[in-house]
Length: 201
Image 1 (tube, rainbow, N blue to C red):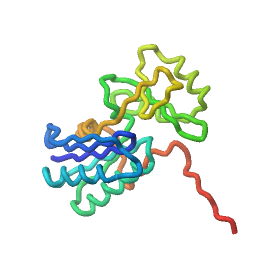
Image 2: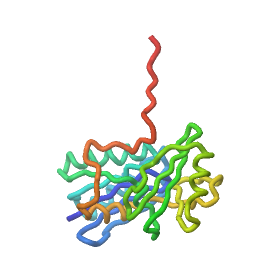
Image 3: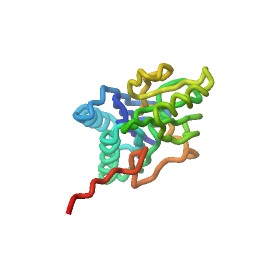
């Protein structure tokens, strides 16, 4: 079985293809949210080299809404052409590290931040929104040995280490049928309700 993984939720994009139990294709690049050309170039390369995938797994964030939407839309298009199964999984659960348990923090904009906890590549605590003061208090209570990761630079939180999700880990997780994957219709992980501007009458 071939599993194609697409991960565009952070400043480092990645694509990987797992065939059987071996990663046959693995590419990473600086993910410029205004230029998707590298993503589609690598996608074309993996398809030419290794053909169609049986399963396509997409990283759902939280992170770049635009990047995650591009990955989801691409997976849907490929599904229509090939009949592949499409599933999704939280990107923060596949941050590249050896820690079995870790926390993830991020800038949620509008003067807020998110906090989540991952254990065994599954969400132990789903992302919740906090003020900077609340997040500082939360982090201060953590064990000093607990790893704290962020996918963007947050210098105000000294313990936070910059790390990125990896498509190859997403592909490997997709072999485990016991994990809870999102099924279509896939959506990025929202940290808050979408803001809708109602036009004036």
